[in-house]
Length: 288
Length: 288
Image: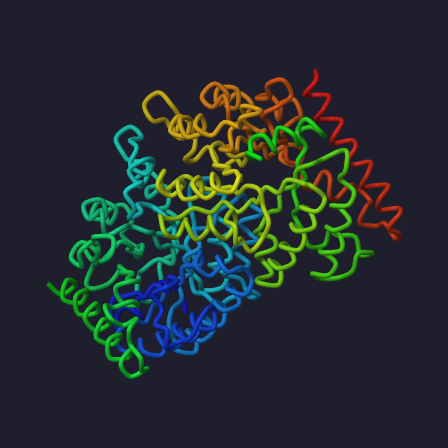
């Protein structure tokens, strides 16, 4: 099924919540064990508890890559497990390079012989459209998605993304350049494109303007919660409950006192409550 | 030793030639074997033949990442071998992400517990200075370098990098923003900064202007040879034979007929000739 339609189905099922897999050292409860085996046991438990609340996950590859080949092999096992759980996997890798190199990245993550299962990957547009096209091409052939950084959620986004190019900001200019590519990639069932964009929850007004430029692109929205964006800000670009994917990592993964849990049952109670609270916060904003 | 000084020493020893490690499938001579073991045997042989001609290598991580954890473990073995050969390793990874994530990447590649040996890493500036600072900070603490994409060598560089921000292009604006960070990081012996920038050989006029903006930053120059940049264009920003690192991948690695070599001796002859020819081409441009 077309990636845009898969995403729309996932959002229709459990809403826009996407759980970010960010293994911060020192925050994983000791009951799951130490080191990489502890990370793996923890995230396997997380994946097993998302049903009914979240159908999308976003592994942050940097935190696995930090541990080299062993960390990445672990991440691949998590993604394979996520697939059996019918979760959509958005790989947060922010890759980008010239033609033949971009083709290697595209094959690595989106191709039929990818080393890790994922449904879409984040990419960086700085080097130009010829660096994005290999990703789009491999994605098209394999019902995958491409998620282009447009307006990120960090304070430094103002440094370059917000620079004025005549009457538009750089990120608006990039969005305009992406628009025809997004339009060509609308899902036959949902109308949502397989070309997504990253638009931070910390920039709600910018998100509204970007929705006009990119009416068919689902927005991947970081910055909700820990980075200061409200649920209302995070879903501001939604249309009929669709078209936004709101990421929460720390708020769901590491609820208060959960690191002190001494039994799996205690941890599950705290985790389930944090997940339900986050899910409800976003659904209420979406419906309100 | 400060990275800027290490780089200046390397250039003083054998000139600005940097050999890119790009394992293109189908171009590695069959005599080295099939699959990943063939890739490893080939590049180990390459590393053993660089003495006197090149002291710098640039692994393109995408081509190893294409093969997942096994490919990356192989790359780590190559980098460890390069270190024993006293080669400087510039990791071409083009990473970039928000604060805590950038810190994970910085630790992965430049920190004391990095999973792979490298002396510097390429990074993408699109998301702003707060995404570069974690790399600079870890680099400073460990005598490593950071190489920021400024003006790349691909045709698509014109899409966004060349956009006008008032009277400057985006890439010039980024260079101006980097300038004080580069100035703070000059090597005590050489005066060359540990903050490098990528400036393609396909943009020689742009390189001259960038040299004025960034007088202390060594330029990593892709695009020489296969992408159409001449040796003269590639070294245009050099000062007294210093301050440029000229990458050649395919031109050195895959000389004509070398894939047909049936004995190691035959391959060595063809490889040595291509390496010497490339080295001479760049040295002549530098001296002329």
